[in-house]
Length: 222
Image (cartoon, rainbow, N blue to C red; front, top):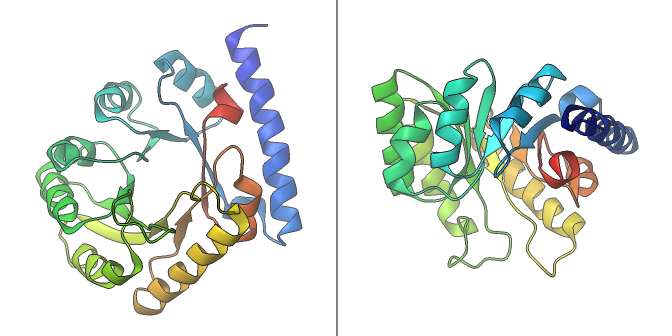
């Protein structure tokens, strides 16, 4: 079996999971965007997935993402990893959506890069679901100020929230908590409708809780 055949087979199986999860949640399949997370995988895998109809691609390191995005500017690139401020300008030059904004300094750096590149970047605020500010993600008390800074920044659009289910916490419980955070954000910023949640092992729970983006690597690319 060729690599293209492997990816095609994995995509069919993944689509079946997504369709079933949406049906069980009473949602339409087109309400959920699949992001193929291609970190550590070659551009040839991106090309193969694009040939199969995948349009949204995620990466978590700028040095790997930037050349891939340059090779396929027709795809919609998502930056899904922890982001350093000194890489923000580069990421803003190609990413359509940044899923991991958790501090004001990053908002400022992304905005400057987006303006310089003449682009508008969708920003998702990364939420810490265990309340530990030492981990990636903003704690609940910091979210209002972070949302205000993002919504007021040139070159950025506040699009919603993102989270990773903490270890040791049931994903369904974690994503229900994220849905509550998202609802509070939408009450102040109606355009912030996106919820990025769910990966290979817990995408069903995320979809049940209202996820609009799922970030899948292993189940698709191995």
